[in-house]
Figure 1 (cartoon, rainbow, N blue to C red):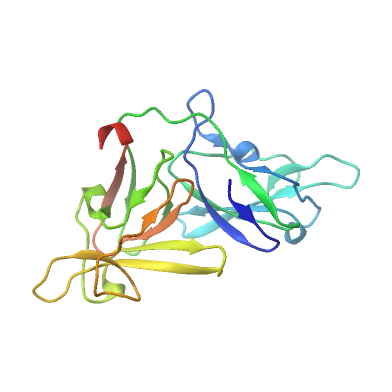
Figure 2: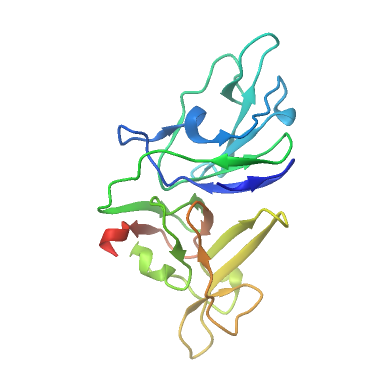
Length: 226
């Protein structure tokens, strides 16, 4: 249950399904301690979902018409509550418009078998998460490539990258697959290429993955299969 202050963004990894085993509706995705809803998006709680193919955000907000009941809508259509859903394995940004509060994501744990996969082309960003409520090791991230291999280089811009959002500082913590000349590839924090990172992406948190090489598929296996 992450805490969030006014104007802050938090990256929420979707690690649950609905009770029927499907994607969770946007309207049911996040429980807010004290929701903030308005006729204006800028004065309301928001959810931002990344569209990998289009490289743009789909934005939702808690819309409350005058004299009506609050409902989650797509920013471009306030006439009806959205029916959009978010599957386990994606990440969304939640932006808080009101006072500091706590957020809760709930649902059914995805069946502990198989793997969840996302395909990413050269230069694409995928906003993804472990679809199960466990942490992800950044040092061992290369083991999650089910097609293609990690692209590593001495330069971050020529390497596969992972970006984690730091809510407290409103900035990105960046990692990349670093390969020194004559050495072995390892995942490092962008500010320290001397040592392999020991950081993990904790349960409930999502991350951006950016591909530097040809198309690859990232598959995160169920904990029981690890």
